[in-house]
Image (cartoon, rainbow, N blue to C red; front, side, top):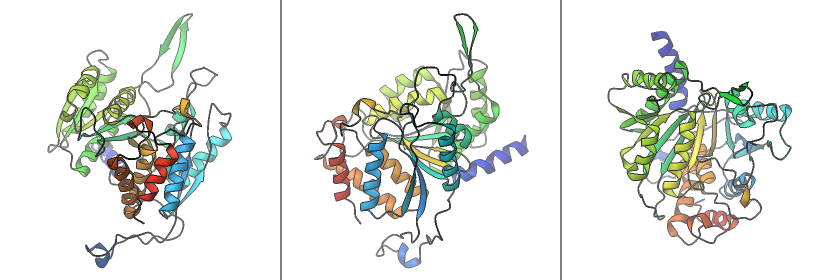
Length: 382
């Protein structure tokens, strides 16, 4: 067991401590003493980083256009390799999936919109979205739910993190009809992956200075499956005596989030619960359009919106809110050690929202997606 834990620690340390990836050409990212002083500007990169871009469905392409326009205006040293992968636009195939995977494996960093998953069964249970995650082993999804200064909601000054295992659980794509009219849908929980996501959560809490990790479960009903997840979290918690550990049943967690979300710090949970909690928590701070997210394996990082909605009814209407995607892009730049450009983009977005003059319809305003993007560009401190 000791060897297993050591192996788990090594693999996750690459993620939780931030793996840095290969750009085009050499990098010169170290700060000199002069640059790190208060008088000098932050360091800028002198090389270009290649990033895979998958716009996805719905308003995804419009949101990616906003990212590209802001990056161009801010002279951000990132070059996108763009691929259109869609099950609803007849742009999905094994060859296309292989192209995307090859690009992601080469660049190690990607930004992605929601790839819509049709409800109709067409002979393949696993969606392209799920297959991407599995082939890259993107086991950890991280959604930082943070209130936006200047935009008031019922609960202000929220700051909590939702960490979800996303390679097994209810999304294992193992369904079959045992007898006519009876479908069995299997939920897979393994000790290895439960301990891995728990270790990731505690490593994240340690690195970010968080005080508490809460495991979310339904072990009172699914005594073996969620019981194993809960047991794994408790075992890992013993390795982190400085971090408080608690557990909570999923239904109670939903109620507590609505009534008093301030009691939570870092939450860790299996796949389906995480998807539900991500969306609930996003609603507490403004909705799907404002919360960024990211997914990690030991080698790769994919940045996307925290609440995954294609918002298909808004396609072509120029009303989507690009805030979440722009903040995800800023987090991606931080992951690439481009601190100057990351802060430039995120501060511009937050400044526009705080000023309150340009807001999209979901935040109670009348601005279009283009108008919001242009307002962000106008506030870039280039």
